[in-house]
Amino acid sequence: MITTGAKFWFGLTFFTLVATVVYFMGSGGEEFGSVVLVAAVIASFIVGTTCAGMRDGNLQTPGGRTLALGTSPRRSAAPAPWPAFGAVGAAVALVGLAGGNALLYVGIGIMGVVLVEWMVQGWAERSTTDSTQNQELRNRIMQPFEFPVLAATIIAVVVLSFSRVLLALSKTGSTVIAMVLATVILAVAFVVAARPRISSTLLSAFLVLSTLGLIVGGIASAVVGEREIVKHEVEATHP
Amino acid sequence: MSMTMASPTSSAPALSRRPGITMVATMWIIAAGVMGFGGLLASYFGQRGAAQAAGQPWLPDGLALPNVALAVTYLTLVMSAVTAQWAVTAIKQNDRQNLYWALGTTLFLAFAFINGLSFCWRELGLVAGSSPYTTAVYAITVTHLLVVIAAIAAFMVMGFRSLAGQFSSVNSEFVASAAAFWHFAAAAGFVVYFSLWFLEGAPK
Image (cartoon, rainbow over all chains, first blue to last red; front, side, top):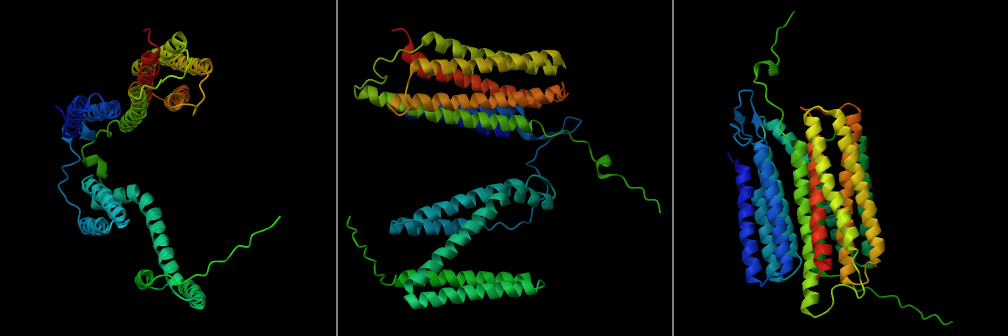
């Protein structure tokens, strides 16, 4: 019997094969697309054959009964915010499309991330009947990607927002703000180090609010625009 | 106080090990490799078709393909697929002596292929970047050479592990996976030979 996964891949093989024939005949024998489609036919057939040979990776009991991994009787109660994030991504992409700017790609990127996260969570929640183990499985796969990407994104947003603020203020004002912010960061770090028992909720709330404030300030500064910066003239050097 | 507890595994039905994780990973790599070579060859044929449509020569002037050397070189690689499968058959029968012979022969043929390919490159005398043809030829043949080297690495790891007493008729998945990747390298070599050399150097 052909397994469910194998049916999917063989179906893909069939449709790619049809697409190859149609493309080859319709394009008058164009070689680039035809070769790529032929490669897709072979690749999907290889994966389909693997699925069939491995019985979709289902476990077998000694009696020969198949325990399909997709028939877990219990459902995880893990929250799934991905539809909401997907909607945010779609909205950002629409705004970018209407404005003809880079927000289109940001929105597409958000939707791509949501798709991957949602698929992995959906797969992990059906891996075993133990929701804790499912969560650990999901974290083991995704967190090596999530933490670096999230950290880089937060750093980029903070740096970009703060640079907008500094560029919008006067030269003296930006110097003062930079020093004040550096002092605040140092003071908060000192407090956190001095009081290890500080509530993580309080600390998280402070960090989130600070970041949001910085982002709002950055957006407002971007709307106001940069101050006039006098360019330094370079004197021509004579030999 | 003595406690008698049944272990969780003693009452539950014993499940067989999840089948073929290494083989599944190998198959995914092979599928990705197929798409990779598909993209490279599509680029090659796309440029070739564009040059021919524009009435420009595709091969550099005066290029003489060493047809015999190329054919023997790639035939060597295809032959090694047979010896790679010999290794799988040997380990499935717990025949370690034949396994060693098969591994050694396969690696010997692979190094002969590399030697032959370097000879062909020298005979061709192509300079990468001098024309679209030469760039495409080096992109494809070097990529294929890297795949062959990866297959050699897998077979060498398998060889060392088998010399250490690992693998048996019930533990042969790594051997089968390495052989599957070797078959992919050989099949890719055949396609590369047909596309790059046979179509251009066939007797007219």
